Length: 107
Image (cartoon, one colour):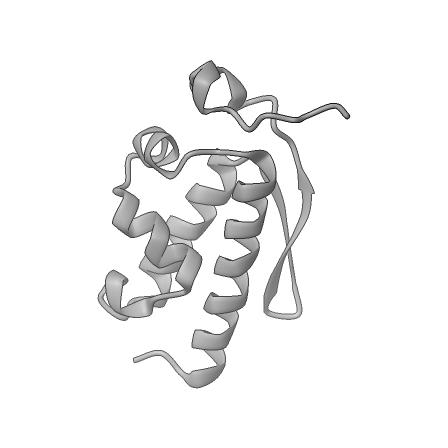
């Protein structure tokens, strides 16, 4: 069973994953397909939900790291915490249909 500290770390890292995904303008369904996971699993990762991974820290961490790699995020692990250092959009961009890409408006 996960400790309170592990649950907090999972929630913090999940929030960073969600923020990075949204900043890159990615669609959950497309990313789920590319990761080989379900949308429900990605949402659980972003929420830091241990229960969705059978309360297994290893299973959740492995899935979170795979998700982060799919987003082309550079993960820095130090002091038992994971930090997202850089976001690169180039590697996943070709997989997103043009109509689903985040639009950047020029004023």
